Length: 220
Image (cartoon, rainbow, N blue to C red):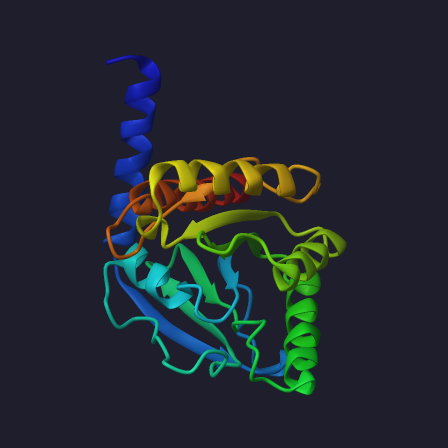
């Protein structure tokens, strides 16, 4: 086993240990006044409605019902906060791009999210979930533009990749890399996941644990 392999094993184990610890709901906010205090580093999850955001949060934490899934896309309009082991907060952002929502709802989402992103110094990274069967759409491009404008680091997470054949998956990964490469706020790695099959979950846990550890070192 090479030193790189050993390092990867250490990172995977750190991710496993962090996400095996207690993770509890702490707040739901639909306005700035309702946001919890910035006590810990935060990572947020954004994506179109029905992209699998709640399923991913549940898969990461190993808890089936931590984040509630909804049969009605766009139903959740709040920012949901979870405290992971007093080390890190997970933030489930409202879904966007739902066809049945009035424009006023979409504007409200944009306003609140923009305010959150621009003023949240504790936010380490936004994970932008993209349905691998659809790729980056116009609504996703608007959010990417928002993340660039607010100078918030983001990483793309492809979801539901178990639904694709290997050639299809390789193509969507390449297309996604090309579309995100030009964005200065984009993290270079694309995360390939399936909550149903647990593909890529261990690696994403390791990456998030690394962000928490990095923040801890900066504070010391």
